[in-house]
Image (tube, rainbow, N blue to C red; front, top):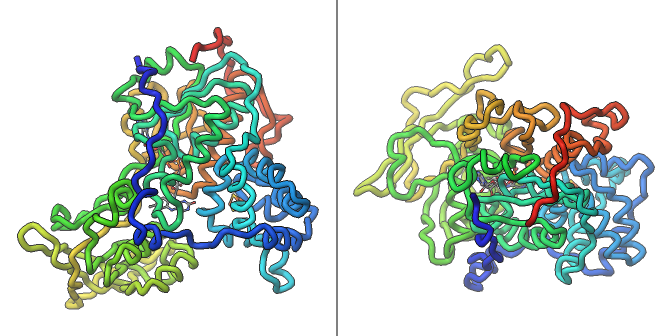
Length: 484
Ligand SMILES: Cc1cc2nc3c(=O)[nH]c(=O)nc-3n(C[C@H](O)[C@H](O)[C@H](O)COP(=O)(O)OP(=O)(O)OC[C@H]3O[C@@H](n4cnc5c(N)ncnc54)[C@H](O)[C@@H]3O)c2cc1C
Ligand code: SF4
């Protein structure tokens, strides 16, 4: 049985109270908008009838709607539109690759003009409400049902916000000391500080959502205990740690996984942490680019990126690559690390071999081949692996009916797992994506869960027509209202 006395207020993250030098290094990338600039920018919006920006936003924020409110000086109205659709409206304004989403769909592109700065305006609108702790959302009338969310990342927060607005009691369990998942712990501080997501968590507390932290489900509380107390359970546990590099020398001091390294910079004392002078980062995704920028800002002198495929094949967004390039990163395309070198248990170098594309496989993808006698060694004192993360879902096998794919992600049908009481969303169900995708998935899972519990609501068009939506199986009887 979990102990409700463990409900706690959130301590101040260390990273928000570091040295001034550290704070300078991690100042936000895009400056905040002043009110006059915001009104002028929002007034450029053409209020398109078909709202391509809204359709390009996975959380379906009514962008023209909130532009209109900013233009007329109604900041609270604007924030309400944003937060109703996306409880992480401020975090997403900082983390979304907006040029590839809402801003990429702006019709201004057609006339060769700059797109409306949607993400910056979104942050401007929400910041004011969060700064002043104004409650713009309202909890629904209690409906007597109680839902547990496992994990307090974006997927669970979005799911909980929807449910609370519909009158559900919601308890969120997380093994961490602070809520928020990756945005709090694992996304570099120059993008989002650890204290930012906690402002949005406060909105959930205003909606009556209850946070039970430092509790690992499956270890500190059993699934049977959850099932006994809750009407339904949402699983939003994200992914595990960064995958192993599977190289000899990986156990040397100075070798880290990207996720664990960023966590240390956000939760430890980064201005005192030992950051290598010459660092190699393996991988070419957004995480690798983010880590390289963070390293430079933490004082690394030389930073190398090693990727076994060509530059054209890198998975990172172009703007993330350009930003890393601006920070002086040295890129080694078509090179594969083969061994981490060390002396006295400490990293001294990274041995690599050049590659070239092999013959195309059945899917047309060319597996890199090592070029004989092309070895070279990078003189580095730190190596960081950024080669992706795998779901840590094995412990869910203890739940009868819950099924996993080969890659460990949870199999769902309309967000419901093979055990009808369990729903799942976010990275643990769809694999590594974006914060805004986890929000969209948490919201959709809330609708599916709500339908199963007997209060069918409209499902967004992409998940099926509301009129044709039927619960996946018979809803259980509504119990007494839980005492929380
Ligand atoms: C280094 C890095 C950089 C990124 N940069 C960006 C970016 O710039 N923009 C962007 O949009 N996305 C970015 N992402 C991706 C984004 O963080 C994820 O897509 C998003 O956080 C997924 O949300 P989630 O709720 O599914 O999982 P998570 O955010 O991972 O949250 C899962 C939560 O579940 C908890 N948990 C796990 N198991 C248990 C258990 N047994 N009991 C209790 N609690 C448990 C964890 O402690 C965690 O708090 C980045 C990811 C990483 C790793
Ligand atoms: S949540 Fe992201 S994609 Fe959606 S409107 Fe805001 S910045 Fe654009």
